[in-house]
Image (cartoon, rainbow, N blue to C red; front, side, top):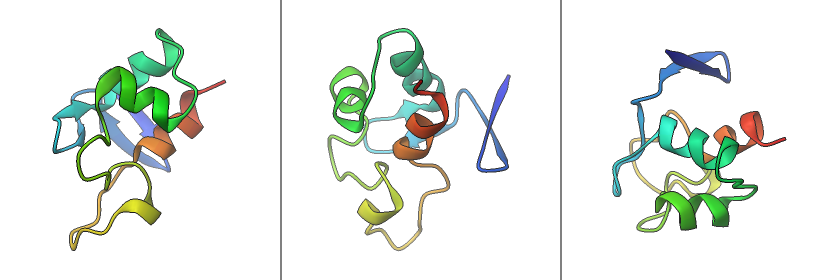
Length: 80
């Protein structure tokens, strides 16, 4: 099953945080099932963004090869 975010499709197994190997599915689970409402919640529940932080948002991404998907985009789509 895939999720469409910003007109792009990503599988639940897509790795959003490469430092901690956190997938899209784990982040969506943290939002929908565990009640994550902000980036700090996602970091606490999944460890995504707890190392270099590049996966949090485009503004936090200092890497040369930019990420295709950020935790902030996932939060925006799934947090209600």
